[in-house]
Amino acid sequence: MTERSGRREFLAGLGAGLLAVSGKPVRGEPFARRRSPAVPEWTYSIFSKHLQWLDYPELGVAVSQLGFDGVDLTVRPSGHVLPGRVRTDLPRAVSAVGESGVRVPTITTAITRPEGAGTREILETASGLGVPYYRLGYYRYPEDEDISKTLTEIRSDLGGLADLNRRFEICGDYQNHAGASHFGAALWDLRQALEGLPRRWLGCQFDIRHAAVEGGLAWPTNFRALADRIHTVVVKDFRWKETSEGWRVENCPLGEGMVPIRPFLALLLKSGFAGPISLHCEYSLGGAERGSRRLTMDRDRVLESIGKDLATLKRLVREAMASVG
Image (cartoon, rainbow, N blue to C red):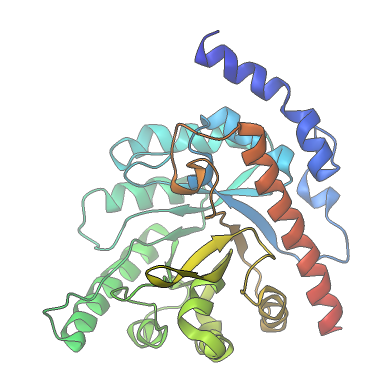
């Protein structure tokens, strides 16, 4: 059996397997008709890093049948769409997933500089396809450089990107990411760098997992500090694990860790957030968690795990709504 025929058989049997996970028919209705009136006007996307072992049509089928509304599509080195092929491949990807009724509200890029290689091509192409948001790449604090100098340089880059975003009519969001050298991990620095820049074109992709790792009990304050800048959101979970080398962060399925997801969702509801929510599955999934194109786990199990995380997220949203009243 060839790899291509194997994929066809896999997708042909996908509907029955996903029906057991999601309870939805294989040919799901459009989101606007299947949304419960009790659910807020949020849309749920899957980070396509976890599905880079699927081509564009297969991606659309799998995402639709899992019950997602959209794809947070990787448009970066080693991503679903390579930056050098963005003019040809991004339209193909958006069209292919669209045939399954799935949208692309967000793309994830490595863009950090307005004059960076491929920056203009990516923004112009995405905007022309109706993609409203993109995630920037990461900035870091060099150990041998004064922090204030680094912040000045980052703010200059962000200002240039805000101008480009306005020109191409697409909004850029910076994801707060945990890590000793990551700009934005502390969140106050991201707020400071965004100060005075146009909110319409530049903001934050708030990642509650990373905010909880770095913020501990202060994450609600950090959320409030950036609330008017948050256009998109990332949801995932972790727990602390004691190892022979000390305590380490261990990623886990949604709802099984330490991330205060329900309180976070309640704050999100109160804030009036109306953007897309991107689900990340960073725990062990046979390489899918790292963006591998070759899995060491059965593909049905990978999809089942992702589907369970989505079901957990939607349950937590309902519980958060009940707590808000």
